[in-house]
Image (cartoon, rainbow, N blue to C red):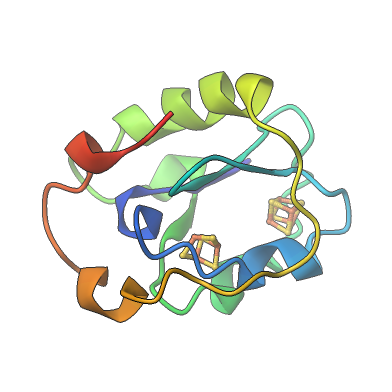
Length: 106
Ligand code: SF4
Ligand code: F3S
Protein backbone atom coordinates (compact mmCIF):
# COMPACT_ATOMS: atom_id res chain seq x y z
CA UNK A 1 0.00 0.00 0.00
CA UNK A 2 0.87 3.67 -0.19
CA UNK A 3 1.54 5.68 2.97
CA UNK A 4 1.00 9.31 3.92
CA UNK A 5 4.13 10.65 5.63
CA UNK A 6 5.25 13.55 7.81
CA UNK A 7 5.05 16.42 5.35
CA UNK A 8 1.25 16.13 5.19
CA UNK A 9 0.98 17.23 8.82
CA UNK A 10 -0.39 20.81 8.93
CA UNK A 11 -0.31 20.98 5.09
CA UNK A 12 -3.26 18.67 4.40
CA UNK A 13 -3.99 19.79 0.86
CA UNK A 14 -6.45 16.89 0.27
CA UNK A 15 -5.90 16.78 -3.52
CA UNK A 16 -5.03 13.12 -2.96
CA UNK A 17 -8.52 12.02 -1.95
CA UNK A 18 -10.20 12.97 -5.22
CA UNK A 19 -8.27 10.47 -7.34
CA UNK A 20 -8.46 7.41 -5.10
CA UNK A 21 -10.64 4.77 -6.79
CA UNK A 22 -11.31 2.91 -3.56
CA UNK A 23 -11.87 5.86 -1.20
CA UNK A 24 -9.30 4.74 1.31
CA UNK A 25 -8.16 8.12 2.66
CA UNK A 26 -9.17 8.92 6.23
CA UNK A 27 -9.12 12.41 7.73
CA UNK A 28 -7.86 13.58 11.10
CA UNK A 29 -7.60 17.15 12.47
CA UNK A 30 -4.36 18.05 10.67
CA UNK A 31 -3.29 14.93 8.73
CA UNK A 32 -4.64 12.29 6.40
CA UNK A 33 -3.87 8.58 6.30
CA UNK A 34 -4.36 5.70 3.84
CA UNK A 35 -6.03 2.48 4.97
CA UNK A 36 -3.47 -0.17 3.98
CA UNK A 37 -6.15 -2.86 3.87
CA UNK A 38 -8.08 -0.96 1.19
CA UNK A 39 -5.32 0.61 -0.94
CA UNK A 40 -4.89 -1.22 -4.26
CA UNK A 41 -1.53 0.36 -5.15
CA UNK A 42 -2.94 2.21 -8.14
CA UNK A 43 -0.30 4.99 -7.68
CA UNK A 44 -2.72 7.78 -8.69
CA UNK A 45 -2.50 9.73 -5.43
CA UNK A 46 1.28 9.99 -5.27
CA UNK A 47 1.73 12.75 -7.91
CA UNK A 48 -1.34 14.67 -6.69
CA UNK A 49 0.19 15.71 -3.37
CA UNK A 50 1.65 19.24 -3.72
CA UNK A 51 4.09 18.59 -0.87
CA UNK A 52 5.17 15.08 -1.91
CA UNK A 53 3.98 13.38 1.27
CA UNK A 54 2.80 10.09 -0.30
CA UNK A 55 5.14 7.13 -0.82
CA UNK A 56 4.92 3.39 -1.42
CA UNK A 57 5.21 1.49 1.85
CA UNK A 58 8.61 0.04 0.92
CA UNK A 59 9.99 3.43 -0.14
CA UNK A 60 9.11 5.81 2.69
CA UNK A 61 11.89 8.35 3.44
CA UNK A 62 14.52 7.28 5.96
CA UNK A 63 13.39 7.97 9.49
CA UNK A 64 9.71 7.97 8.59
CA UNK A 65 9.08 4.25 8.89
CA UNK A 66 6.81 4.96 11.87
CA UNK A 67 4.22 6.35 9.46
CA UNK A 68 3.52 2.89 8.04
CA UNK A 69 2.04 1.73 11.34
CA UNK A 70 0.51 5.15 11.99
CA UNK A 71 -1.51 5.02 8.74
CA UNK A 72 -2.82 1.58 9.64
CA UNK A 73 -3.72 2.64 13.17
CA UNK A 74 -5.36 5.98 12.43
CA UNK A 75 -7.31 4.69 9.40
CA UNK A 76 -9.28 2.61 11.90
CA UNK A 77 -10.11 5.66 14.01
CA UNK A 78 -10.73 8.44 11.47
CA UNK A 79 -13.59 8.93 8.96
CA UNK A 80 -13.20 8.55 5.20
CA UNK A 81 -12.66 11.73 3.16
CA UNK A 82 -13.47 11.64 -0.57
CA UNK A 83 -13.96 15.29 -1.52
CA UNK A 84 -11.19 17.87 -1.60
CA UNK A 85 -11.40 20.73 0.89
CA UNK A 86 -9.37 23.90 1.31
CA UNK A 87 -6.04 23.37 3.08
CA UNK A 88 -5.21 25.29 6.27
CA UNK A 89 -4.51 28.97 5.53
CA UNK A 90 -0.90 28.55 6.70
CA UNK A 91 -0.27 25.27 4.84
CA UNK A 92 2.46 26.85 2.71
CA UNK A 93 4.49 27.81 5.77
CA UNK A 94 4.60 24.19 6.97
CA UNK A 95 5.80 22.57 3.74
CA UNK A 96 9.13 20.91 4.45
CA UNK A 97 9.33 21.90 8.13
CA UNK A 98 11.17 19.21 10.16
CA UNK A 99 9.86 17.36 13.21
CA UNK A 100 6.17 17.77 12.47
CA UNK A 101 5.25 14.39 13.95
CA UNK A 102 5.00 15.96 17.41
CA UNK A 103 2.36 18.33 16.04
CA UNK A 104 0.08 15.50 14.86
CA UNK A 105 -3.39 15.90 16.35
CA UNK A 106 -5.54 12.82 16.94
FE1 SF4 B 1 -5.91 5.21 -3.29
FE2 SF4 B 1 -4.42 4.39 -5.32
FE3 SF4 B 1 -3.41 6.09 -3.54
FE4 SF4 B 1 -3.86 3.56 -2.85
S1 SF4 B 1 -2.37 4.25 -4.37
S2 SF4 B 1 -4.39 5.38 -1.65
S3 SF4 B 1 -5.70 3.07 -4.03
S4 SF4 B 1 -5.11 6.51 -4.94
FE1 F3S C 1 -1.72 15.44 2.74
FE2 F3S C 1 -0.75 15.73 0.34
FE3 F3S C 1 -3.05 14.57 0.62
S1 F3S C 1 -0.64 17.21 1.98
S2 F3S C 1 -3.88 15.55 2.43
S3 F3S C 1 -1.14 13.81 1.40
S4 F3S C 1 -2.50 15.97 -0.98
